[in-house]
Image (cartoon, rainbow, N blue to C red; front, side, top):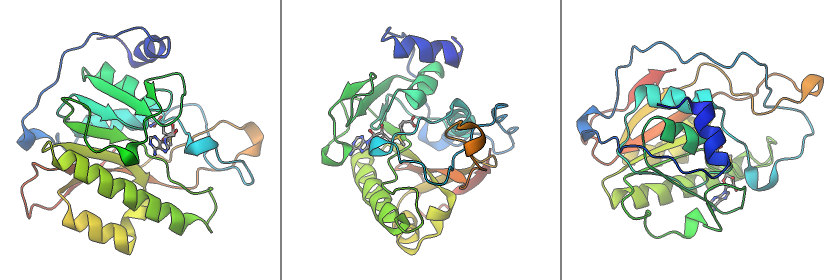
Length: 240
Ligand SMILES: C[S@@+](CC[C@H](N)C(=O)[O-])C[C@H]1O[C@@H](n2cnc3c(N)ncnc32)[C@H](O)[C@@H]1O
């Protein structure tokens, strides 16, 4: 298997990758909870810089270790759809783990198929069984905009749940940990086939802005849904 950085380079150059499908039984989707934590990056990259401009259309590339942490715990039924693929950061790691990946984005970031608005899609791409993404949070990074962000995330979650239900599929979204505690989020997630939450103990540093940065502001977690999850079975709490 190619190393993930080599995979990422090839994907960014638009070179094709060959990989086998990784098909798993629905019942074994959650891997052992006692795996060692994925080592965080050694370089210091900060998330929050007071006064910075929010990237256009909420573009923030997910560091490799964050996707590795998800895959350490969850086995996905493929092919997987990354519907907000950005420059392919998550797609590259999924592919490096042997999954076939369909990558789309509303914007053209030189990767995947551009011009696809996830919220207007009525079905998953042909053959896809799972959705994995770090969705747009829809805020400006400010506290004042966080309720709008919460609603945008809920809309995204509801839509993704509907699409994955049609294929008895899985869904993993990277969210701010505190978002899970919101009243509406709790209602939607409790009514959904909520299979696992993978809590990242290390805070994500999205940017390296040198001395102008301060410490990462938010903790994040992967929330994982599986339409094959046994009804009434509580979600697994997993740490990475
Ligand atoms: C936070 S970035 C994450 C990028 C990539 N998933 C990653 O983790 O590296 C969110 C991405 O969602 C895309 N996006 C925003 N709204 C979208 C929509 N309605 N449909 C599809 N993509 C969208 C943005 O263009 C951006 O690339």
